[in-house]
Image (tube, rainbow, N blue to C red):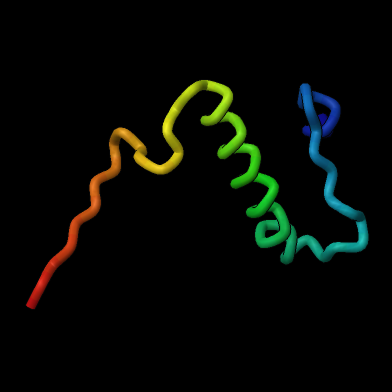
Length: 58
């Protein structure tokens, strides 16, 4: 079963991209999708609720 036929909103990559390179090419659209999804849901993209910054000073 082809995953593009199962998806509600498929994102198809250009066929000339080598398979080993597809993860790198997919990162930007995935990040943009996640950013838009959090904005639509009303979450603050600048302050994720479960991530805290940890710094160590020497």
